[in-house]
Image 1 (cartoon, rainbow, N blue to C red):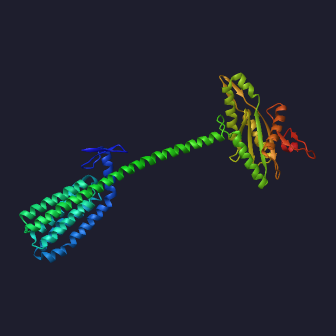
Image 2 (tube, rainbow, N blue to C red):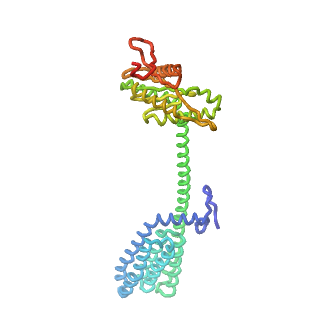
Image 3 (tube, helix red, strand yellow):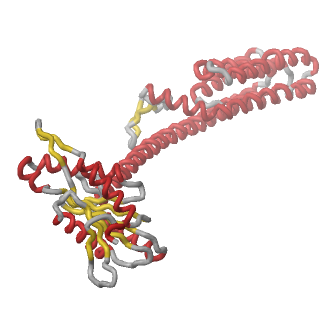
Length: 416
């Protein structure tokens, strides 16, 4: 007989409570027995203590059997329980646990029944209470309701047989004890059934939670990855992997705000690929894209981590240089121009050279301007470089004593 558990598609036996899926049942056993291992060990320790301390009761009730009781308790029962406790610390515990439990419980039960059979009234009634205590231990503290039932009902049958054929127990007491024992077993069996069923339901719920938690973690990781991708797409130019214009404007505004609060140098290089339209018209847009990538790669390799490079639009690139004066910006721009001039792209068997024109604008210490003004200055310098024959760089400078603009045709020092 089996039933289908709704919600997790897990079928289990209504009688034994076992999952029909053998792998799932093994997983439950491993989990359940591992979690109940400490409880089982405590139970065995308590059982050793109780069987030992009950020897004092033997001396009071059946002093004539004190030697026999000493042997039964300390040569059979306590060593058997101690052996079960030691096995629980070995690798064989999981495989042989049921057998060890059955053997240990059988020894405990039959020794108690032996004392009932060989003690006179009222001793046999007192040991009957001890037998019920043994059964209660089996049901509540042994983590397997099948094994608990086997041990408890075997104990019940053995008690009936001994009480009827060997023990000197009045029939009225025998009937009353049998009645109590039977319904005690029945009640404990139901309680044990409910306990294990609750453990199995809790196990299924934990599996559902763990699975959902794993799915949620995967979803969160995927969401985080998608978020990073979206942020990258929002910040980066998809072709060159440099910052796009919008992200660059945000960086530039932040740097200018820092300069307004803490005066410092700030330089900007604007560059334009010479005759870029001819790459697209003569060799195709694939070659044009390759040229853009090559220039972007060269720029990325040449600048510092603190610098910010951007594809400003079309074939124009911009580099922002924090804490860099005009002389430092000029040296970097010259290295960039020379490095790009050495760069080539291949179109079939033909190697195509690349050059750029560059314009530099520097925000002097203490000067306050907006991003648009700084870009305008660099653009004017770039315009002058292109008009000078291309593959040039020019530095924007304000003429002394003049409110207009003067674009230097050489280095900052020469221009001064």
